[in-house]
Image 1 (tube, rainbow, N blue to C red):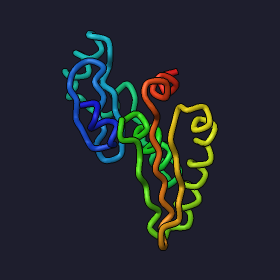
Image 2 (image 1 turned 135 degrees about the vertical axis):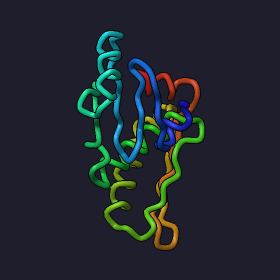
Image 3 (image 1 turned 120 degrees about the vertical axis):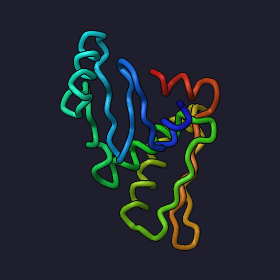
Length: 136
């Protein structure tokens, strides 16, 4: 399930402490056995979930930041194109600039390029030290 998570694809999970991502909302079930059983007995309604989070995906910048942070956790990294959207292009430029210190230390590779009407960001963490930094 980790690849699904890192790629921001929808998934449903079951059991104590399990987290789902459906319709842009992350939701976590109760982690304690007694609370989980009570939640199930009450029909597993949304109001009984431990956490519900849609905030980071409410706007373009938040969505980009989440996609970047999750995508960098994969060996392939990220490849984003702004497709003529100026606001998205500025977000990608800012992300590329923010990664430059990590490029300088050998923890990441990142390039931001203008290709026709598209601003394109390619970035990835370098094994093993880039991934170790992402865990800290």
